Image (cartoon, rainbow, N blue to C red):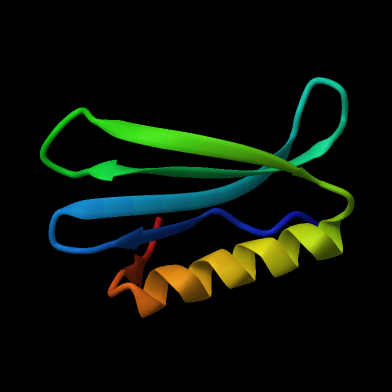
Length: 75
């Protein structure tokens, strides 16, 4: 089972992590981030070998966001 999407926020910024399969069936960890009060943002996608690696990557990125002052929010 793929890791569930996770959303992190500060007062002015957001960061979203999610996993999905692309058109070729490869497992992809996607990151989206930007400002809450503007339309600027970026995204990055990386292919991982299996679900265990995807879970490890999402967990590491989540820990990093929390160390940078983000808090996890529902939804």
